[in-house]
Amino acid sequence: MLSLVLEEKTLDSWLSKVLKIGRVGVLQYGIVEYLSSPALIERHTKYEDTIIKLKAKGITLLSGPCLSKESAELCSRVLHAEFETRVVAHNRNLRKKGQEVVSASVAARKGKGFSWEKVLGRSRVDVALACESHINGLAFVTGDKKVAGDFAHGLETQGIITYTVDITWLKLGMTTSPPEIASGRSTKSKSEKGS
Image 1 (cartoon, rainbow, N blue to C red):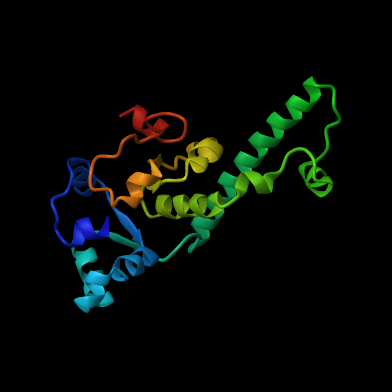
Image 2 (cartoon, rainbow, N blue to C red; image 1 turned 120 degrees about the horizontal axis):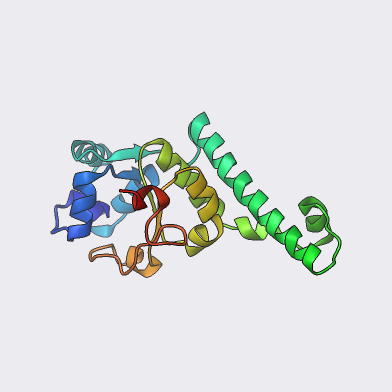
């Protein structure tokens, strides 16, 4: 996305609209990725110049996930809400089957039943980034369908807008309209449905 915005290539209508009506943010690491392209290295493009261009376009710079107390607390609430939802559903299922209900920590030690670590996986970072984005007044775009599938409830209950797009579209540079944008389990988040 940075090359589209900074090099003033023709923007697809969806990205132009996002830049006009919303706030866009980028991770500092995204700037490093952008500046590591051979063409930019050959042109001796400087980090400071890139930052000036981004700020001139109103793009927010995010250093990383959970940088503030607020975003760390928000992320904790999302994870707790999702954990509770999962445990309640898992325990309800066990009761229906007439099986013993044990705590998630006991099940994890025994290597049986509900595994919170499997649910978390690599998605923990995206959930933290979604929270950091929200604290900064931004929506979050991810190619990780696990975030939308496994964390939609926790994110939506906290009012965090998260869009999930096809990962191949992200890798291709987002030069066309996304094939499908989803928020959680639906096309629009709850906060957008009312508008």
